[in-house]
Length: 270
Image 1: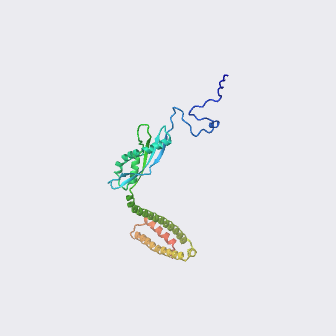
Image 2 (image 1 turned 120 degrees about the horizontal axis):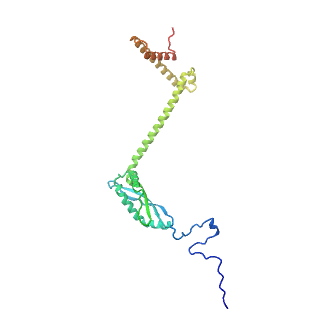
Image 3 (image 1 turned 90 degrees about the horizontal axis):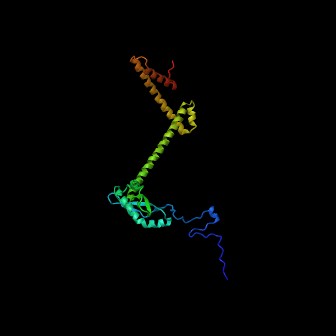
């Protein structure tokens, strides 16, 4: 009894290593798929903040600067997990390169000049990548620099005094601005009251203390007017005694004299 061969399957065989596609993949592609042969994967990178600072000597070798390094690792045709694993293994090597690049520059800076050193180091490290050739993962690096703890303790009183001085200075500036504004406002009020025919009664509306101050203010102002008038009179007489005759200078003084006399009721009546 002969066996008939099985008819060929209508479903095509799947390609090994290729995930089976469903109808919804056209709308929602699979989360992960294997790249086609010959197509390189995209570049992967990650930021690595090293918790342990690198110590480099400051000028004089009595204190150390603390370098807090931030590496950015980059690789091609590699998964992120593999890059992280390999970067951990390269960390000691990367720290050696960083120390080699920074020691000479750090020794040129005084122990309390950490901010200046940070700017100089980042300018020096900018645009550099290690290793410079090959297919191994490479890194760039930036640093944050902090001073030795002993230096920080010695700097603390200096900055406390400086902060206090700057705060006191700013407070005095605020007070000066407020005093100037208040003086201008009161000056305008007093001038308006002085020119008002009912000044004595208007001053009473603001309280006894203000009225007393205002009366003294008006009295002092009126005491100075006769002195100024007398000075102007002497000036005009002096020019007449010299027989200089009328001039622009003499006329200007005479006009000022007459103006003050009219404003303050000092015109002699015959």
